[in-house]
Length: 416
Image 1 (cartoon, rainbow, N blue to C red):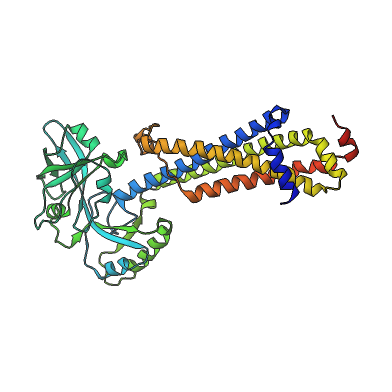
Image 2 (spheres, rainbow, N blue to C red):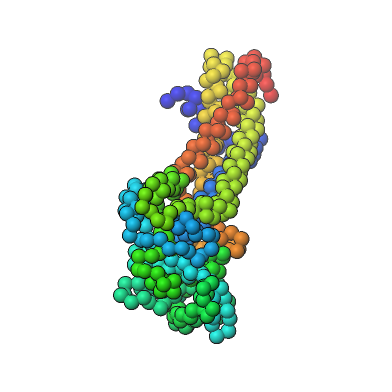
């Protein structure tokens, strides 16, 4: 064992130090590190959780990429494409494509006994995975699309059910208009399930039905759909995969009409731009907290050096080099920082656990798209944050520790 580590350990665990003046200052420095790492862990956990929660909800409604008719405008009244074209298999074969699901949309008006509301029907087929709606289902059940006949069930959001005073089992009438028709089409649906995602702008608009109902309303063939929802394995490769899909559909000579891929980041640009701004805020918080923790330790280590001036003079008198003595004090600082990080991690993880399990801090879903502060803990993030904080703080202490070289042994031993 090197003597620097031995002395650092003895000084750090010396019970007599509790009466020293430096002990109070160092305790404040350790507390500053603890508070800093608590804020850092909470900031990163909340940001990662928030981005994941919002992104998963947006993707749950719209998938990662949608394939639509190029002639389709931004309205929900789509021009159909064929679901059995050759390019479908080529797109599905891409390594980052997890699955492709057909869908169709149709705007209409819901009429109940007391209210009238405009909505967009989104129809799914038997290839749809219901994991997202099962997670956010609060009443009833998801639609059963396995029957040979088109079901008359419908799923609506809780906000729509509340506004129109509807519940599971109620019948509703929907009216659909086309420019070529003077009389609206009428369809009667039965509410099978009610979901709540807290994505207000989506909950207000969409209702879920069997895709065959929309095909009948539009007088489409069985293989005509509004488009494809494409779910990916890796979201980070979204732009790359969108480009690959575009090359496939644009180079398909017999593709009439032309198909265009629309990524979720492009379709809901304002949401993802907003999430990008959150990253910048987190980096600012990380920088400030690490800087505060570092300056706290700088003041603590300077006071510790001043208080141990006589010991430094004695060590120099017996031949200890400046580099070795600096290493001694940096080792003590490492112990103190580790102590601060340990307590900070305990407090941060406790807060994260309470919030994740009980959701004690609520949010306004109309503004934040979630109804409580989301938490996402990741072991790799915790390790990186702790190691980075320890390393940066130690580096910040190298310069102030160099004042040890200016201490003269003869004056230091007489220092009082």
